[in-house]
Length: 217
Ligand code: E4P
Image 1 (cartoon, helix red, strand yellow):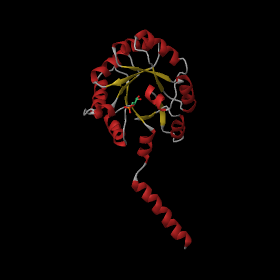
Image 2 (cartoon, rainbow, N blue to C red):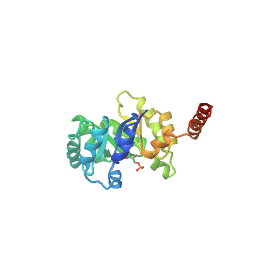
Image 3 (cartoon, rainbow, N blue to C red):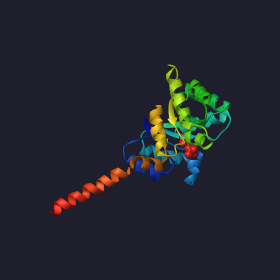
Image 4 (cartoon, rainbow, N blue to C red):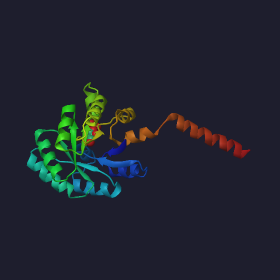
């Protein structure tokens, strides 16, 4: 499983990139708003200068023509840009046109197996089931990820990669890997939590203390 960072915060991306484990970034309008930035082109430009991998940027139009036009524009900024398009009839139409034009897409706000199947049939490069938001309403988000992975594997023509999105805590990452998700897109805070373990910290302190004791004689 690969890990993308789910943020529009440049400092977080810079810090995470140093670890050598991040292969892409996902943004969305809410993440942009959280950073108080509306200059999508600049933000994407900054991210592509840090991470050499797929960077998702979302369209705001709701009609197929507008989505396609925005997508053409966004994808011209860098070969690494992936256009995020929410599930809807308009979104599927846009994805199928963009797929034929060789533009990479990420079907976002995916909450059902049917939506994921339609996204794959339209030619989406990625489909993003939102795990945390399903959990929030009492549905099993990770079960959906596992179901999508399983169904996609049954058909040769289904080449969309599954991104476990809306990840809220480290257990979601473990479960995404077990479910066979190709990618988990994680907030920076969760990435840091994935590194931590109290026994590792205790072990490091103990090694240092023992070494000091013996070195002092
Ligand atoms: C995915 O691409 C989305 O940006 C993201 O995972 C949404 O997560 P949220 O439910 O925490 O907003």
